[in-house]
Every structure is written in C-alpha cells, then in structure tokens.
Length: 333
Ligand SMILES: [Fe+2]
Image 1 (cartoon, helix red, strand yellow):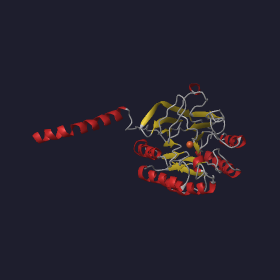
Image 2 (tube, rainbow, N blue to C red):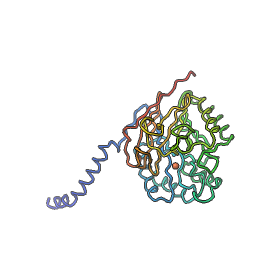
Image 3 (cartoon, rainbow, N blue to C red):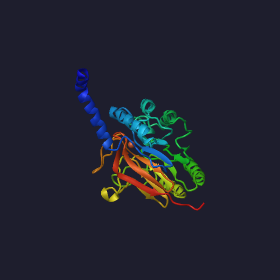
Image 4 (cartoon, protein in one colour):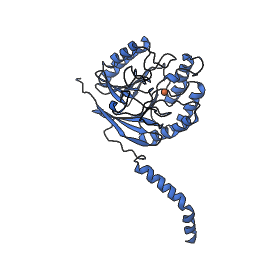
C-alpha cells in the first residue's frame, strides 16, 4: 500500500495534467464529432497551406491533417491551391512528406495556386517546371496523377471539377482549351448529378466576388472576360458550388461586418454558390478578423442542403459562429 501511495504521489502532477488537458479539450467539443446520419458526403476544405521554407508552416500542418483524418473523417480532403510557397521540388517534397506522415483520408484533391505556378518568388517565374512539379508531387499526394492542372474526380457519387491557372502569374489565366473542357465536362457532370451539387475547385475566386476588385481585395482573373466566361458556364447548371482560396480573408458571415464587402459563402449569378476559404498556412490578417492559422471549413452534403461549418483544424476547434447552409435547388428531371 505504501508503495502504491508513493507511486500515486509521484505520478499525481502528471495524471492531473493529463486529466486537465482531456477535460479542456473535451469541454470544447473538439475530440468527438458526431455526424448526422443523413450526411451523403463530408469534405474537409482547406486552402493556402503555403508549405515552404517557413518552419512554422511546416509545423502548423501536421496537427490539422491529423484532426481531419481522425476526427472529421471526410470522404475527401480538398486543398484549394497555394499548396506550396514556391512550387519547387524542395517545397513539394516537404508537403508530400507531411501528407504521408499525417494524412489518412480516402481521397485527396489538390488544386494549383498561383504560388504553385512558379518555382521562385524573386527569380524568373517559369510555369512549365512548376506545373510538372504539381503533376508529379501533387499527383503522388492525390494517389493519381492528373493529365493537366484541370481534371475531374468522382467521389461518393459526386463530381469534383478541378481548375487551375495556366501561367506563372498571381492572377488566374485560363485558356480556351480549359474553358471548353469545363463546359463539356460540367454539362456531362450536371446531367449525371440529376440535381445533386457539382463541385468546382479553383484557387482564385471570380472577379467581383469575395471582395476581388475592391481596393484591398487582391486579384482574381487576369481578364474580366475570362472571369465572365467562367461564371456564365457555371451558371448554366443548377447547384454548382465553386470553392476558392487566395484571398487570405477570415471567415465572415456578413458583409456589413467588414469594410471590404465580402462573405465567405456568397451567391453568384443565378445558381452558383461561391465559397472562399481562409488561409490555413499563415492566418488571415484583416482588421477585426482572426490571425490564427489552421482555419478551414467542413462541408456536409445532404439531399436538400449543403452545410459549411468553420473549423480550426490546427486547434481541433469549431469556429462556433460560422455555420452556413445553402439549399439544394430542386430541378425537374
Ligand atoms: Fe495564398
């Protein structure tokens, strides 16, 4: 008995620390996620991890990947571009290792961002080498090498059309080849979907959405004409959900709450739901916004609506204020 008492005395502070840690975490409802039984598809949506030389960004990603894999347990993990900081082999090797060690999800989709479209920020910006790196290393992370930066994935009965810039510039450049592919592929996907949502992922938001075009709003597409053409193609189909990043804005529910006029989930045109993801890699810096890294969204797809819940994957915390649902439009089949 004396031995046991001595042991408890020694281990007491350690056990107390474990108890407090578990209590603190579970009070936040962070460890266990109960999924509604009628969820048809779950997706973890992150963007702008900017993995590169900055060590804290390499440190910020593993806890988030583990939270996604162990707690969110999505059907698909989407990383909507700026996966790396400079698209070179060293950056991609680091990202691939982080995924290999920490991610365990059935499907992963990566999109190319402007920072993945060059291999050096200060030097000459060359697209072809960066694209080759995305296809090779991004393809390895996805488990399937795409033919180009735009491609189709079918997951759980839903179509994901991934788009990507075709030039080494901050703005998105899309050729006729990509827009024609999108037009044909989306039409086929929408017909197959028969009213279910179709997901389109592209790093840059369309112009004049999510504060693109506002003074503080950063860039979207290189030309208004391309952005308009993209919007027109998307708007022909019901229930298109367009997912972007790039802006590095915090989660926002109400345009009136900020001075640049955006919300994270916006209606664009007649049918498009446009979703702009916060920056995972180095936080979101906007007056009044949060500056903590690790933010993203969990998307739950139901038959009649799609729910977006804010989550800090790094902290395993729900962003409690952010819970937005959009109805699935009914279509006459
Ligand atoms: Fe970015």
